[in-house]
Amino acid sequence: MSLLFMEDERWYRIYIFKGGIFVANGFMGKMLWVDLGNGKMTVEDLDEKLARDYIGGYGLGARILYERMKPNVDPLGPENILGFITGPLAGTPALGGSRYTVVTKSPLTGGWGDANSGGTFGPNLRFAGYDAVFFTGISPKPVYLYIDEGKAEIRDASHIWGKTDCYEADDALKEELGKDVSVAAIGPPGEKLSLISGIVNDHGRIAARSGVGAVMGSKKLKALVVKGKLPIPLADEQGSKDLRTRTKLSPAHEPLNKFGTSSIFVPLCVAGDPPVKNWGSIASRDFPHPEKIGAEAIIAKQKRRYACYRCQIACGGLMTEGTGEYKYPEGAKKPEYEILGMFGSTSLNDNLDSIIAANDICNRKGLDGISAGGTVAFAIECYENGLITKEDTDGLEMTWGNHKSIVAMTEKIAYRDGFGDVLADGVKVAAERIGKGSEQYAMHMRGQEFAAHNPRYAFNWALAYKMDATPARHPQGPGKFVPGTPGPLFDRTTQKNMQPGYKYANNYMHVVQSLGVCKLVIWNLPDATAFIDSINLATGWNLTYDELFLAGERIANMRHLFCLREGVSVLQQKYPDRIANGPTNDDSPLKGVRIEEELIDREYLQAMDWDPVTTMPSRKKLEELGMLDLDVDFPPA
Figure (cartoon, helix red, strand yellow):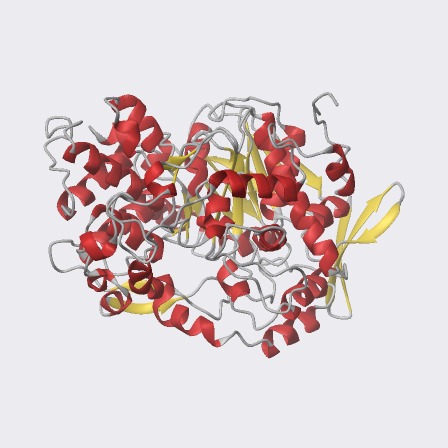
């Protein structure tokens, strides 16, 4: 049982257990469990030790799903759990506290799945009274869940199921419930169980990866709607506000403020980072004018900037109305680096309006733009090599740079229309359906399409794309270490002796991603003091750096153990040759650079104290992390 009260203008939540009481600041203290099969709902108190050990977000989610879910369940079946989880800094004065995470067993990779999003939904979920909401079962009819300051109700969604995209569903629910609600919804791809579908909030912020939208669709859950103004209890609210006021971001955030992540696209094309021609070529040879879709060209079409919840960077942008060939609406979201890579250079498309239009389709319908763009590029290469024809592609000429066909096929994927149905589950499944040797053009790791950063350019991605529980994902690679953090330095320009620096930096980022804060903001802090101070001012835990990094390592092991239990190993797949060794025509700055896969695999497994063959964490490691209470099958000694 818990009680919320105010004293000296500060909110406290008191938990009452048989052994006494304690104060749990930084958390709302409640988790809601919803069985969509029978409509039953249960509220559970959040255990403070669990929160301190696993922080929040996907850290907390991995521990809970490992304990609450049986092994080897069907990802699209009733026994899979879908969780929406915040972290202790979401919705607080902490810089960048805007994010929430969706957790589940991934139908795309078969292992651990998570996706996160910014905007305002994460903070509003907490203001509605909960740190997390978990769904089990499958509803007999389309529904949405409405939470109003702790009171939850399952409501019929038949009037918006099959009739609305994510924006339309958001608008319809606000018309029904009031403008002050916050909505996270799926569109046609999620309803049609596309394995590359996501969950959209705030008209274009999307928890995109791992196929989380398909899991939501499988449960016949159209949306989670939240409303509330409940305060988040903080150990030192005034101290949190003061820290925000006196913390100035480093000058490195200024390009993000002006351009968003599109600021890095053109220079990184020169450096050899973004994918070109489905990873089969280089920019200087086949994409010589990246400036046509670069930051300056985008800003020329931008109406205004916008920000996630109380964010100082405000890297988002809203476009002016498309008046040319592509009639995207005013307010369409600005394409960022990943979209420029995945709908631009990798398909040899330098038509900016078409990229804005494709991005708008993904945001409105609820498609992972990275996976969708990579899948379209795969289809183009299959077409160019005669494995599919115009008759297969519904009359679309899927040729390099054909922006009309790129946009049209993206729309088809969203609705599983015609050949879009073949592509709607990503490149791995599409290659299985097409056959004819098409798998050589399917650029993925364990089923998930590679993000738009070249792992030969920075070896943090070489490790993360393969060794993380969620493969091929760019946010999982610690690209920058906040100055002032103790520990070994991390050099992402070398593959030799990357450990223990990479492990240390990666553990740090696991904590960041579990706190409910934006990685871009944390990277732009002038030093690490403000980061750890914000945690302690919110929670009162007085965490040390050692405790922080231990929590990050605990989270890394928890996500990894989930994959192992599902029969998914990080060693299951090797890099495609053209990504590991570079394209045959490579005369870029990366010429001759190769991913030394066996070396970095071996060093990483050794640093993590995971078995070099089974990748199982050692008993000693789990004891060190306080995880021996888990049901883990260790191999015979």
